[in-house]
Length: 430
Image (cartoon, rainbow, N blue to C red):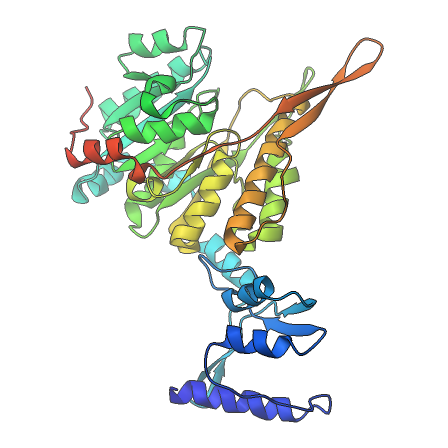
């Protein structure tokens, strides 16, 4: 045992001998899990301590305690400290950093504003120096009202005037309006997500389109923005690219903004993002507090390095943003995430009934990730159907709807994707 660990252990034993409640101390060598299970078989109640798990990939109770919980039938009481144990360095105890302080530090260091990256020539130089190619993917479903302005803005300012982007691609989900034709008339490649990787079938949902976009987009950096934005500005793209180009350790960048809301004929400067504030952020604070500094976890504007995005699964529907955020955090840690203030986003606001269904799907994603992380099943069968309340002229009725986000595997595991990437296709757009 290293000297520092030996000092810590002997100090721990001295503390144990002082309380009068301690009448026996058992010291043994070997696997602590099996030793504790053997000792627990002789008692009616077992109390164990659990420390704070390290991120990423930490168990909620710690791997030893969770092994014990699964291996015994006696009642088990777990006392979990809210702080990491102090570390011994010579004669000095190093005070652990509190989780809240780590989040505050991340928020201060990894939160940016789009204006910080408005010098497009500097971004182009960073891109060239790192020999990176950049793709902009535009997921769309019946967005004829706004998609043309978005494409024209990005094409003119980020493809022609400043060659920051190498391609702008529309990923359509079966639009029945003029969305596809508008993109084609503006010279943009169009892919219908139901036709990408047809051997794997197709599901409804934005997440499905985003997963399949990894197969057709060619850049090492990928930016994805919604196509219903009415106040479009190139900062929605270069703001997200800025942290990725400046800091190689950053793998994923989320946008955030003020979200006005319209109620009847009256508009309010704040009030959008209702599912974010009432579902997503409370659940993150409860179960993934390391991510509590994310302003808008459900924002549809974000970007990342291909090498990161291709290594995580994608949920097919409303839960895609939640799943990506949690999985990228688990895979790369908090320091690999960043967020950027895009100021204001004006778009159509969804009715409350639609937001309720969105929240229902997002909660399912949280439940699944909690089960995956803890290696335990929280529920025998999580309900995948929702009773919707329908208001009729003189009464109310119930409507049953299946709401379930399926999970697509990491794209890097798809053989067709591996084969395509190994060819090293070029990415230069016209």
